[in-house]
Length: 169
Image (cartoon, rainbow, N blue to C red; front, side):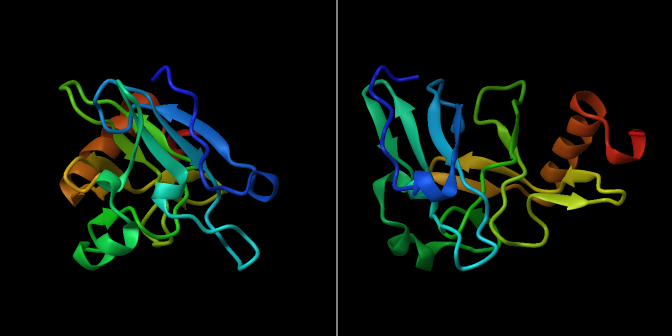
């Protein structure tokens, strides 16, 4: 964690009660800082872009996501099916899986409103992760993993780290 004071992010603490998340999301060895705010299910809930919820740690303190660019500048360049950075986001229920080789961890459970993101109810009120993202340095944000990577990471997660719903009582 950088020795710099934690940044003040643009989140309504009184109404949205964010959870602090400290982890090395981009795999550079420095602890990053994010706020987990639930995805807005109605118009009374706060809605946040990633740059309002997260900063990256480095030797000199904190730096912004999106490589310092404004999300509105990036929206035209993004492939919405592959990237997840600039719209309403939810980091509240994520898990990190660190690969053996150096680099950013795989992030399970990011949710940005798509039906195939976050967790899915597999029955009997048991939820399993169904999406995997990873930090993309060129974009300065998370990018959705391809299907083969997602399947391999989830298979590892549910065989080594946590039991799948089908194996729970």
